[in-house]
Each structure stands twice: as C-alpha cells, then as structure tokens.
Image 1: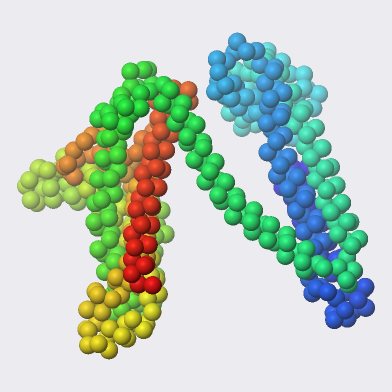
Image 2 (image 1 turned 90 degrees about the horizontal axis):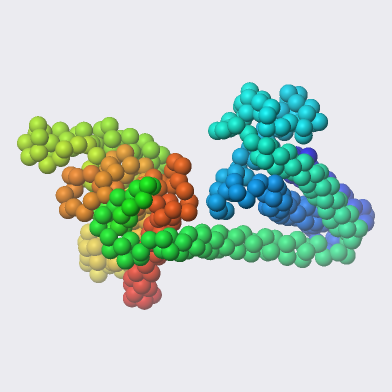
Length: 489
C-alpha cells in the first residue's frame, strides 16, 4: 500500500477510536458526565492518539530506514571497478532507483508484466521502454544496473507490504489496548496531556536537532574541503577563480566584500526609511491612515525576490545607467552596465523596508503609555518624547529588527544574481558589478559537480563561514540588547 493511503488508513482508525472511546465511556457512566474523571473528549482523544502515534512513528521510521538497508544490500550487485568512491556509487544508485521506479510504472500501466520486468536484460531496449513512459535516463542501461534495479524493486515491494502490515497492526493494537482500559475511572486527561507535552517537547527538539544537523553537515564537508585546499589561501586569498579542471584560486575575500558592500547599501536605504515609517505609523498617523498604509507597506514583504531581481535588471539598472552612464543625464560615465552593487543594494533596500518598519512599529507600540504620558507631563514636546524616551526604550527591539534585515540581506541570492552581476572583485566603486557568497554557493553546486573536488566542497566552506559571521552578529546584537534593557528595566 502506498504511504499516503497507509497514512489515511491510520487517520481513519484514529477517528474511529475517538468516536468509540467517547461512546464507550459515556455508556460506562450511564450518560452522566459527572461520573467521569475527565471530559468525554479526553477519552476519545486517548484512544485516537494510542492508535495514531505508534503507527505513524513506525511509518516514518520505516520510510527512513528501509531505503538505506535496501541500498546497502543492492549495492553489492554493482562491481567495485565501476566506481571510484562513495560519490560515484551514489550516482550509480540514483540510476538504479530511477530504473526500478520506471519498471514499477511499466508494470502498473500494463506495458510490462511483473515476470517480464524481472527478466529484462541489458540487451533489451530498456531505455526505450522506460523513455516512452516518461522516465528519462541519460545513458543505456547496463546489465549490472538493471540487475540491481530489479533486486531493488523486489526488496522495495516486499518491504512495502511488510510496512503496511506492521503499521496497521500497530494502529489496531494501540486502538484495542486504549479502548480496553477506557472506563469512567480512567485518568484520560492525564494521559492525553502527557502525550501533548511529549509532542511539544519533540517539536522543540526537532527544531534544535535540525539546526545541529545543518551545522554538522557543514562542518564535515568544510573539513573535507580544507584537506584539499589550504585554509590560509581560502581566508586571505584575494582572487576567486574556480576551475573544475584544476588550478583553482578560491580566495573568499572578494566574495565577502561584495556581500557586505551590497548589504551595507541596502541597510542604508532600508533602516532610515523603515524606521521613519514606523515612527510615523505608531506616533503620528491616525487610525484610518494606519489601517491603509501599514498593509500596503507590508505587501512589499510578500513580493517574491525573483520579482525584485527582475525589477533591478529591467528597471533600476537601466535607470541608473541613464543617470550615471557615458551618455547619461549627469555625463559622468561612472556606470558601464545595469548590473552593479548600487543596483542590487537599492532594490534590496526596498525589499527590507517592510521588515524594519513592521517590526519597529510593533516594538514602538509596545513601549508603555505611561512613559509617553510622563514625558509629556514634564513639558516635553511630542518629537522630544519620541527622540529621548520612546526610541531609547525601544532600541533593543529595533536593533533586533535591523539584525533580521541584515541577515536577510546577507542571505539574499536572486536580487544579487540579476542586479549585481557575477564579478568577484575588491573595489570601492559601487557602480561596478560584484558577486556575493550566496550566489557563488549556488554556482558551485549546480551542474555536473564532482562532490569530492575542492571546487564543489568550497560551497560548504563558504556556507560555514557565513554561518559563523552571522552568529557573531547575533552575539553582538544580544550584548547591545542586554545593555539597554538593564538601563530601562
């Protein structure tokens, strides 16, 4: 049974458990809710959770573990001389999985019988058969790949049926055990609340473990990169010239300079406009004006970044060339093309305005009204109150909003790709094209990259370095926030 249908079956069993559990306890209490330890819905929820949680947990675990076990067993059908390392083996196994999936499609659509699918040989036109079914293969299917795919298909089908039986059995067993102990004296509320608490703890742990997993994946691949490329040349090199044929120069300084140069320009645009907009909306605008202006301002946050990139490429870039180019209105010939740091910085600044304005507005509104009243009562004007009382009190939150905007700017990709160009250079001229760390990560991991080469592994080193720098920025912001909070507590 497909995993989706199995999931739906478990949910149906859980719903049935809820109905039966509730009905059973009401019957045991002769319909008098006052005789129950817990509310009736808790008894139904206890049966439902007892059926759903163990079975879905088993389903998720099975879907994770089964492919790994099958791949380890099937890989033995591929001769070791056909691959040089684990990366090459993974590529071959991806072909195995595609062929196995194609055989399943062929059988399900009647193009092949199960017997014929298991008796195909490499001399048969396997690629043609699967191609007609929409399964794209880059090369002809060799005997060892086909044999491994047939074995993979058999084991997957057997594993799928075992999974179906095991998951449904777990659901029925949990259903029956919970229904058996359901009576008016059972502490169903305690059981349900313990399960909910465990789910909440699991959700929080999952978020933390995901972060830890990301960090470790970056660390391990970064270590592999530094085994192949000198760390000093990476951190202090001033030339970025990757070459998958060898002889690459992978200095990070030009990339980080482009990243921070564009981010600084975007913040110079977004912070004043966003902060002034927040002050106006929270302190000066009336309810009607605020009700119209704030939603319109926040629409900017919902625009996809690719649209901003196209705006930079087609509108802002040509506009700046028309002003600062050779034949521009200023006649200065500072800008040779539309792709430049200033183009990406301006457009990214527009994108960041709603992040700063919306967050700062909420933070300013959270400042106690008593502080405003006290300042005004002492004779300060409204502008003096904003400048000397409200903004200092809200400064920790405003720093957090600016940090969020800075993190978004540092991690932006599409606007930089379309608006800033792809040149890695160290230059102070904002009218020249430059590139950033994120765009280079994408370029190094696209195409037919050999993941054992420094040219591909450098993407993980770039990501790890960017992560560390962002973490340092967060620490600095936390220190600032704590300092000002101590002043106003």
